[in-house]
Length: 113
Image (cartoon, rainbow, N blue to C red; front, side):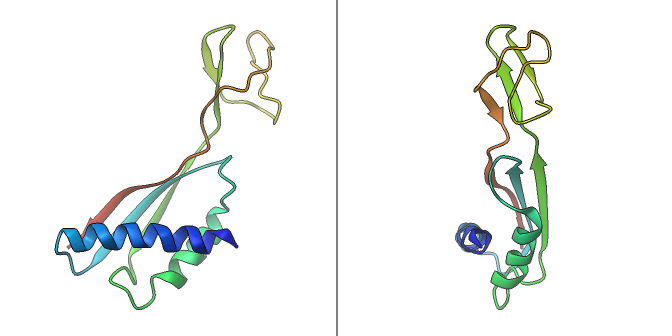
């Protein structure tokens, strides 16, 4: 389960940030996770509960913002949300490989005290 190692790395980043601010408690972490990232949000939530035990983040609220796949059609110069895995533009029906979002895995906010 790569979600555990992903969460361990994310927690280390959060702990480093908290220590840099002389914080003694992490209250909330928020991440953005794209649909194409390969991350299973439920597994990530489980991993969060496991890896935060015994740390200043134990009991913190964990939020995941799911990011949809957005593609760009260079023919139409429009962004669109694909309806299947072929990334076909709904306007001109051209296939595209220009993915604008949906691959993200990022820690976006951290609430500490």
